[in-house]
Amino acid sequence: MGDSGWTSRLRKYLDARNEKPTYFFYPLGVHGETTDGLLKRFDTEFEARRRQDDTTYTFIFAYGANDASWRISEQKFKTDVATFEKNLTKVLAKAISFSPEVHLLEITPVNEEYSANLVTKNKSCLNEYVDEYNKKLHEIANEQQVRVIAVNQKLRDQDPREVLVPDGLHPSALGHEIIFDSVKEALSPLLDRLEQ
Image 1 (tube, one colour):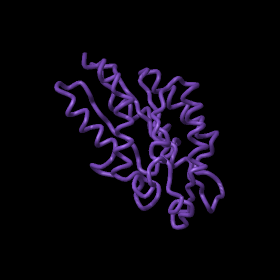
Image 2: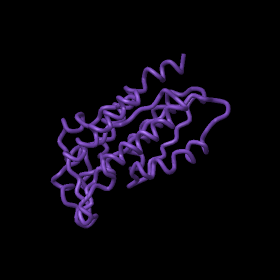
Image 3: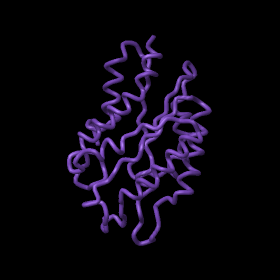
Image 4: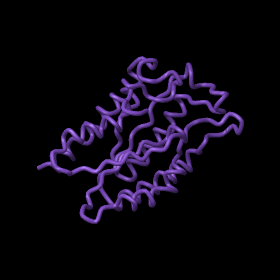
């Protein structure tokens, strides 16, 4: 989403707060990726950015929306809930082995007026699917003792046409601002400690 995305906002926030080089920020999301792809590339991506002079890492995972999309022609989820759980649990175990600072971003809601029947993309995205996967995400987070950054209800409390772009799937600039504010709030105690 370019400069309007929550990760871009977080980078600008960290840069403004960062008087000396204390943070290295790597947004590594891949458009359309599921937890299958995340699991396959986690080790390579981490090792490419691993620092010998610093072992302080913070992970924020924003996954599940693509997993929870219903494939119309196959009549199944892109990633079934059991596989989503298995993938995310494995990735979290890897991340936790490097840092206690691991966060999961809730899956954002959809505007079903547009997302319920995306025939040209062979998928259907409904909030009941998002809720099912978010429920599992919270269960996994509880089991793995990682933090969940709550954004779903904050976005649902707004007009979906204001917080989502016209495809009904992706956050708008306002949606990204709400997500960014939630991420910033979740990271504030850690950032305060690091800067002491």
